[in-house]
Each structure stands twice: as C-alpha cells, then as structure tokens.
Length: 75
Image (cartoon, rainbow, N blue to C red; front, side):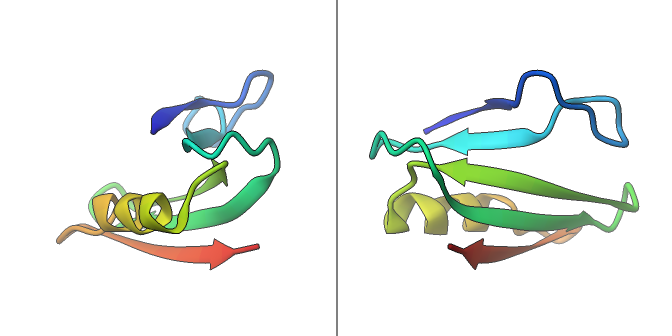
C-alpha cells in the first residue's frame, strides 16, 4: 500500500487530504476512514483507493491506538 496526499487540497492542519492507495488498481474510492486523534484533538478523513478487504482492515488497525480511534466507511 502507498500513503500520500491528494494534490491541490488543503486541510485544517495545512496538509493535503490523506490518501491510501491499495494494490487492486481501482481508481475509485473503496472507503473513507474517519480518524480522531485524542492527544492532538484533531479529526481527519482519509480516502482509500483500490484497497482490498485485507488492506482496508490493515489500514484500520494501523490507525487504532491508545490515542487514536478510527471508523471505516465502506462504499
């Protein structure tokens, strides 16, 4: 999987919208991930493109920690 930012976008923290690109090659969003960072008091939405079910689960697990919670919304 590849992680980056969507060109031409800006979020509250000054970066671009986060994008996870999976291995299926699909160009349409498969899901979005809504995250809340309790330490930074920050919330973000990340776009998942071309991600298999296993990749979506791995991304969700990656964003779960003591200080962060995430909700995966599948298309």
